[in-house]
Image (cartoon, rainbow, N blue to C red):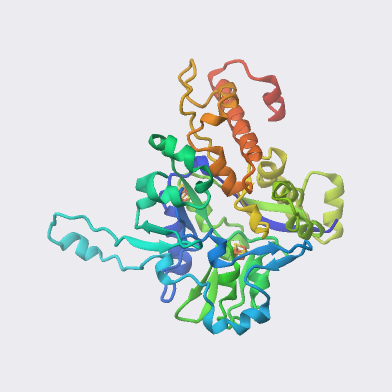
Length: 437
Ligand code: SF4
Ligand code: SF4
């Protein structure tokens, strides 16, 4: 066991209202300058939807992340460094500015002085080609307005696997919000892609950064990141990315996005992990085993053996204490309700998500608390408004079991807390597990 510390974030998707406050405050703090107009280190995308930059999950198109070779070794999807250096001037796999969005300057004077017109401004609809040459027509706000229905939904690569159900239940469209920052991965393909050695992962807390003096603007990191969370500054000619607000963390403040989040849904904290298990977890052959392997990398910060090993490996006493006081390990490993975004990219992302506990569509309980009654939800998983298959495509490489488990636990906790608040009888097993017996 080789113990290391990592800053981690867990976001509870049930609480995100899509207000974009996190994106705006992050932009004001970090990318409000020339060359970075199009950049959102933090973005909030509507799901189902095509994301930011558009279709970033289509790895056949963008060639990001890692691939497992037949011999069980990891290989960068876009090829080795030399191959990529050779093709540097014709790198075909970089998103274009239109894949991000068209930046504009918001002129408040015009807002006040412009004459009233009949039409509301609408961004131009665009036709996009996916990796398998399917055409998608898309424009601003369409993901929100469609609510997962219609053309975008039919042609989403993940949703395609469940299109029959989508057609049958067109009237029961669904949507939720997915806030995203850089994942500060344990096995970052951006770092592995960089020919200049400018991208690096800080040893003390795992934050992934770009050394601006070393960066030569090759942009291999943009290609290599499967989450498309490295951006090119057109003014400086250097790569930039989310820094997890390290200057704030170093003085004991939370990240800007966490501090300003209206829904209070971002839990940020230190976790301890076993560095010897990272490669093993990234090279698990069967995708169904990926989630368990990625969870197994985390170490219980309360385990005396882990604490002793952490001290041996030079982790400071107050950092061990911080890991013990953080809710992140509990949410990820103790209760197993948080899930990683696209574990199949094999970068071991360090932003995990509590999936949204959607209401049950058909079943209404005697109490009228639709979807809040644990036994009802246990027996109505196939009737959730957000299909578990869709969530599994995002968070567990298509395996529905971990999503179902997470939602059932959330429902049990919600029912339990309702009983506590109403002074009703508590489920003894749940009460015991949360220390309320
Ligand atoms: Fe690198 Fe962040 Fe992309 Fe992970 S999500 S590969 S750390 S830029
Ligand atoms: Fe969601 Fe919080 Fe961002 Fe608002 S500020 S969009 S609630 S993550």
